[in-house]
Length: 381
Image 1: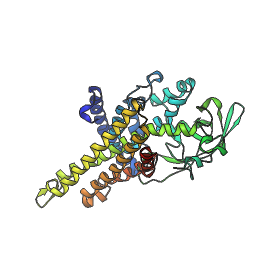
Image 2 (image 1 turned 180 degrees about the vertical axis):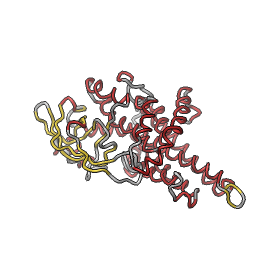
Image 3 (image 1 turned 90 degrees about the vertical axis):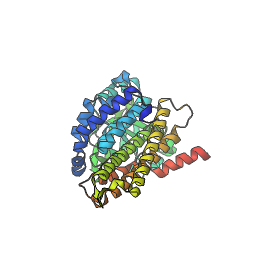
Image 4 (image 1 turned 90 degrees about the horizontal axis):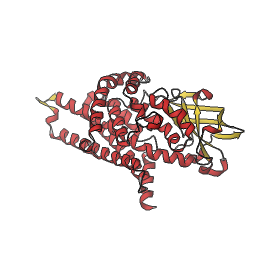
C-alpha cells in the first residue's frame, strides 16, 4: 500500500501530521540530538494532536486506529526526528501485553493515561547477558502471598526514568527455560531504579538505561497472563511491534532522501546543480526505489496485524518488514551523507544524524541477523 491507496482520512491525517512535524518537531531535532535531551516540546505537540491515543482501543480512551495509520504516524515523526518517533512507539510496545493479555481491571487502570499522554510505558525484556537469547534472563519473580517480589536488572530500556510503568519479564520457574518466564506490569513508584544511562551514537533524545528491581513488590493482579506465559507474550508482542520499527526506519530513510534531493538542487559544481549529474541521479533513484519497497512491505505487515494474522505469516512478515526497512534506512542515510560530500560529514547538515539514528533500527527489537533466522525458519521449518 502506497500513498495512492490510502483512504481519504489517512491522506488528510498524513498531510496534517507532516505540517505539524515540519512546524513543531523538526525545528527541535538538532538540539535534542546535540544535547541528548528528551524532546519535551515535540512530545507535547504529539499529545495535542492526540497521537498517543492512536494505538489504544476506543473502549479505553484511545482512537483504535488501524496499524497502517499508526505506521503513517511513526514514519512522519521519524522523518522529522527519530527520537520523537520513539516516544510514540515505546508506550504502545509497553502496553501491547496489557491490551492482549491483561485483565479488564488492568486495562481500565493503565491504558487511558497512556492514550491521553499523561503516562508513558517501557518494555523490559533484555538483560546484560540476555538479548537475543531471552531464555537466559536472570531476573526473578518470587511469589509471596498476594505479591511477587521482583529482583534483577534490565538493560537497554527505552524511556528509562521517564516511564510511569515498566512491563517486566522475569523468571518464576528458573529451571524451566523459556517456559519459566512470566510478565508483570510494574509501576515506577514501587521502587524501579535507573542504575545508569547509556551514552548513545544515535537516538540521543530518547533515554536508554539500565533499570534495577531490588525486591520490588508487585501485586499478583499486575501479572500479565498466567505464570509461564511470558516468553509467548514477549514474542507475540514483538511480532506486532516490529512493523512499527520498519515504519520508523522508512521515515528516517525518507527524511535523509528529502534532505539529499534539496541539497542536490542547491549545490552547484562545474556551472550546474549537482543533481543534473547522472551518477548522482542514479543514486537518488535507487534510494527512492528502496524506500518505496520498504514502505510497501511495512504496510503489508501492518495489514496482517489488523487482519489478525489469518495465514500465520505475521512472524516472518514482521521480520521482513523490520529487516528490509532498517537495512534500507542505513543504506539510504549513508548515501545521503555521500551526496552531501564533505558537508555531509559535518553537523551543519542533518544527514549525519539520520545516519546515526538509522543504525539502531538494524539492532533493536531483534537484530537483523535474528530476523533473517526467523524468515529462514518460516521457509525451511
